[in-house]
Length: 177
Image (cartoon, rainbow, N blue to C red; front, side, top):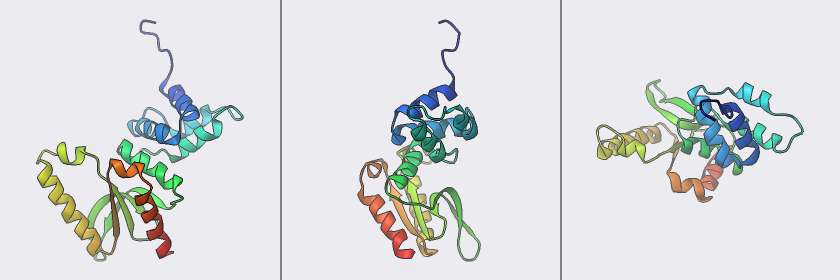
């Protein structure tokens, strides 16, 4: 077709969200939102009510967020829904009791001192100071959060495909309710 566009980013995202599970569509939609290639409102307006997959697409657009800084974080948000874990807010600054900043967390519960961090390989191997330095900094941060009274769950890619960690997260929140 030469240089003529065949479709748009928005149309592609709507089609993906209608046809694929949330685990596929939410990371893609989140990335498009983060890059400013679409808006949640415009995507919702693009859904024709009563058509095949319209509820699934609407759910995907509700779960997607420009705050998800990686596909792993977006997938983690989907897993929270799959395991009935509510109240997890993405990209939250966390402070200790004295008001000193500790860290910006991937997810923190809105009411309870529960934090979920997703660690992709890039955090360690794309770090200019190298993986040892990144690991040391992550450990220091983790200890500061624990000392401030937070329960921290550190997830890696494999955890996103296992139920066990999400069951533990759900139980930790339930214990605090």
